[in-house]
Image (cartoon, rainbow, N blue to C red; front, side, top):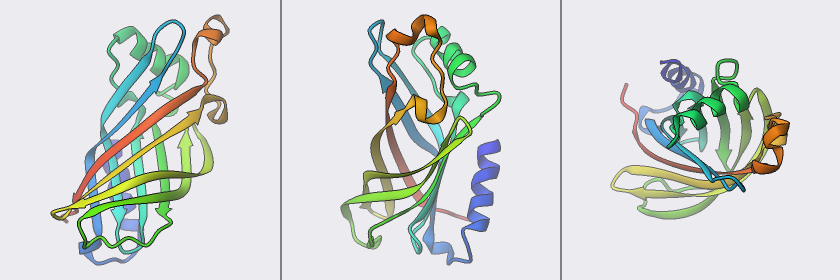
Length: 182
């Protein structure tokens, strides 16, 4: 519910725009993968909120940390309680803008870069990441793959497993967007 409130606040604050320029979803996908010496760690979240203003190329992603689902319940518990402290830091966010001029009226795939602020674990950094925008039949799909260094976001690894946990995590984003209806 908090994600929905944040998304609608973002829509309201992105500026005065024509309703035809706002695309959104509440069911975007974010996943991550970490290779470790003990076992690989992966999780997926299919409740990512995204708003894109095609008039300005501005976008906002809101990811509820507790919505990541793991293949193992104990792993999910450790992720939320020990690493991400999701009760204290419930969301990760990205707020930024595509750097390229994009023709949203043409079907096709466009390579893009987005620059903005990525906030994880209450730590915010300016980032620029590569991705693609696929436009087909009035729908927009955003895709990106990038890595995050745990130390950059003050995510601590307990000493007992320090040598067994990857320090860099691969993040994948896939978000189909549709025209936002008021």
